Amino acid sequence: MLVERLTKRYGPATVVDDLSFTVRPGVVTGFLGPNGAGKSTTMRMMLGLTRPDSGTATVGGRAYHDLTYPLRHVGALLETSAPHRGMTAVGHLSWLARSNRIPRRRADEVLDAVGLTGAARKRVGTFSLGMAQRLGLAAALLGDPQALVLDEPVNGLDAEGIRWLRELLRAKAAEGRTVLVSSHLMAEMAQVADELIVISRGRLLAETSVSEFIGRHGRTFVRVRTPEPLRAAQEFQAKGATAVRPAADGGLEVDGLPAGEVNRIAAAAGVPVEELSTHTGSLEETFLKLVDDGGDPTHV
Ligand SMILES: Nc1ncnc2c1ncn2[C@@H]1O[C@H](COP(=O)(O)OP(=O)(O)OP(=O)(O)O)[C@@H](O)[C@H]1O
Image 1 (cartoon, rainbow, N blue to C red):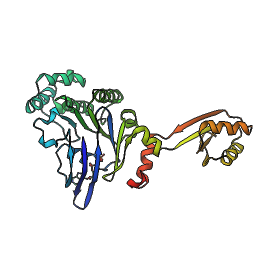
Image 2 (image 1 turned 90 degrees about the vertical axis):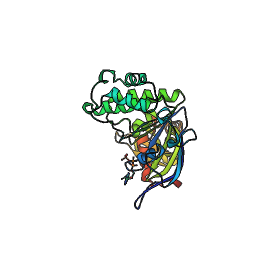
Image 3 (image 1 turned 135 degrees about the vertical axis):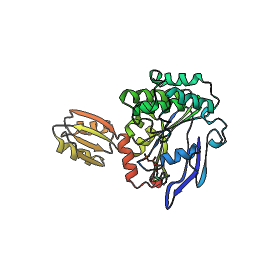
Image 4 (image 1 turned 60 degrees about the vertical axis):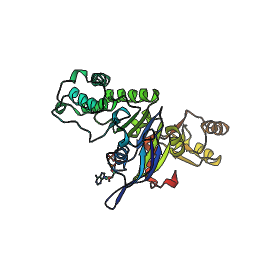
């Protein structure tokens, strides 16, 4: 999936601003951004539901609206794609299948895949949020598409549902499919995504792997517990630490030195070390820091 210089304005507000990125097959790509960053608008433009002011979005080289039977190419879950409340789950999926010339048996198959076989004949209006979300995923999977575009699919799922979804997305990527999944839940994204596209105020902040993103923007420090924190802090600072902070538990956080070096410095100074570990900032911290840095792409 290729997004090239997409721009969308609503009145005076530019909600998607000259945005370009590539979503590769075979991996799960997380689409991250704070609320209102423009994720849903971008996904809607990728799916031909919102018209861009400029720029293009293509799937396998074709625009979504050029696909005769789009569900066979791209499966989508959007916040607004709720089926009619009076329909049964299987009725809704059968109707979708018919409209895209997909065999009717796929409705049963995808209901089974999302764990809704028991609710197949219930009216969608009676569904819990989690069940509705599973039905939305079933619709996305219906045409056995090569690409999936899922807007906040975790919404409404319980812990077991989230685990299930994570495995499903990984399995689809492992089959060589293209999987784009948006979320504002960073911790969740860190567990499921391989690649990240980060936007803020409609602009691209980062297009990178999760580990590279944390490595480049995350804060890595060494945590040391010692009965002589003052003397230890002086030693670390004298030997190249860029900062030494007291931690809440009475230990120290040392920036700018690898753990082995911290250990050697302490040993050479005769400072006893009770505990030594390296910490990497979580995706949550990393993301908030990046967005706080002003959302200026030159920071990346
Ligand atoms: N149809 C519309 N008319 C006017 N403004 C809109 C419309 N759709 C979206 N916006 C505005 O565009 C901005 C981006 O919204 P969008 O829903 O794309 O963000 P998002 O990153 O998906 O956020 P969230 O996680 O809150 O859904 C918001 O400020 C929103 O109010």
